[in-house]
Length: 154
Image 1 (cartoon, rainbow, N blue to C red):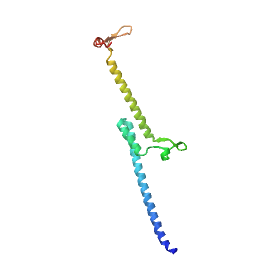
Image 2: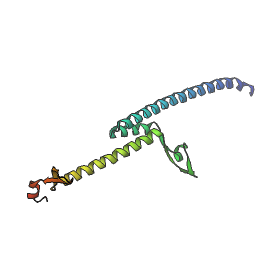
Image 3: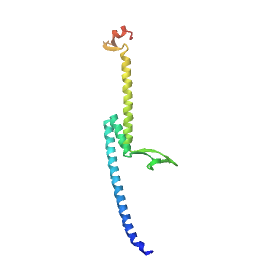
């Protein structure tokens, strides 16, 4: 009774080898697909940073998250740890550059909005519109917009 089980073991070993080969091939395929996704996301990030378009940057950052170019070491075990159970957020250089470009774009948009508001406020006031000239001492003389002054702007 005991010796009869040996033949099945050889078939089982062959099945294990085939299963291991299939698993290895599947892991290789996944790794190659992940590498292609990462490469595509990194290229999109570089293009978006050069183009400095808000929509491009946001789209590229979504690709980066999908390609796992951003993470948390407590969840995925990649990157530095602060202490027991406390992970750190990590990202690739390309993702960091995209976040910096997005912040710079937001800052520039805020500055532009402030400038427009300031120009609109100045348009409501009586301001110097054209120089009449300069005297021999170097003093400039200006003509004021009399319509704005007559309407109560100054």
